Length: 490
Ligand code: NAD
Image 1: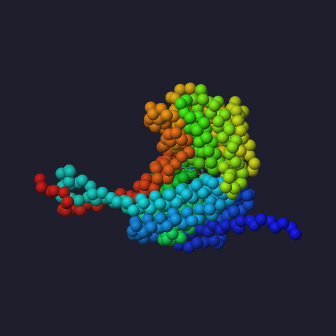
Image 2: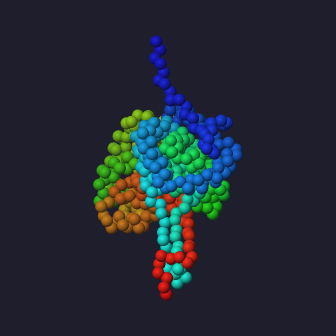
Image 3: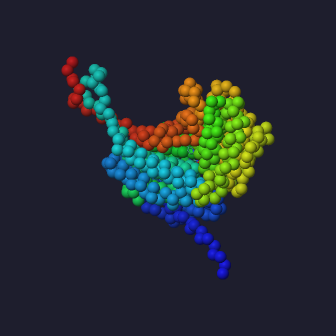
């Protein structure tokens, strides 16, 4: 009797959702899993004319969504948090198949989706406004002025592949909490995961007028971003694509969460073992495909070799392999081209004098965790965004030199610092050109309810449900003449 082949996962359909209807007819594109090298998802390509149709429907539906009570919106988001928790394993599996993300990381991403929805719900419940102190100035006496945060109307959410579930939860959750309708453009590498998150919200009771979903590449995103029927754009992706979105958007509200080559500083007083353990864990999680992944570590020269050997030891213990194995720390990268970037850039740094302590190789789309020691400051592993399983470690002499080195980057998303010297902590907080600083942690840490975002080429705006609701709403003023709660006697 031949041994039966193990059952293959069936190909997952990723239909589009336009004008209140799931559609799966017409042209499709397939997403091949980078680890399994098999088709995981069959996504329906946005058909010509559907961008127009989606935006027409969005404009028509925007006011209906704005009429929903914030309590009703919060209820949907809370149920969505619960449903995402119930589907945690299934969603983590989908992320592993579509992207090569280890289920360990995928499960963590879904836990964050639950938190993000719950925080969005809480923010929906506290939407409010102001009674303005108009009577403090002569011309205002006798009047009443009020403001509230009104929904912006039609939001566009464009997401990248690396955290497609939680980044969508942020954008769609906050937009709905604010009372908008949202058009989502999925990343072409994760149409299945994106569709699954939209389904979670619809199953939780989100009205179909509140969301539409289009699959496709840059051209679909560009057509949406350039359309004046969109009131606010929330884009997360590379700096180059972000610049294109900003040009297409013109004078419209745009929030851009872009790339980075995050730095972490390890001072001479740091617990080097602990710093190395944290950098090993957070430099290679999701194969380094995070905008704040540990890419550059600046270590005070007296502790440099000690740090390298501790990091090397820790990295050697990472389990590389099948993303579906719960023990796997490092799975596949998004595609072979991405893994090749790690190989090519580390070889290039090595040719210019750096040492490769480990890695520098790949098996298909799986890049071996790579440590590049002491690269030249103008090597691409230092100056550009690697977005891969590679950590570059550089020595510094004076603390000011480390701060300067961090700031030479054209990016500025987040940095980490390991020290117990409070004066240095505050100097770093003041001097580093970044949107956030993690003390006694690496650059790669985020709390979803804390403002997150960059400066320089890393973007504009802050992502956290509260900050995003500000972006997704407009301050709407009303002045009532000849009626005042304030005294009017002169
Ligand atoms: P990408 O820029 O290639 O694509 C992101 C999204 O934009 C995709 O949906 C893509 O189809 C779309 N797109 C591309 N060109 C477009 C255009 N001209 N107009 C409209 N849409 C367009 O990025 P990626 O490879 O999916 O993701 C990795 C990048 O995202 C990295 O640079 C990473 O640092 C960045 N990122 C940033 C953050 C953050 O919060 N700052 C978070 C995650 C990822």
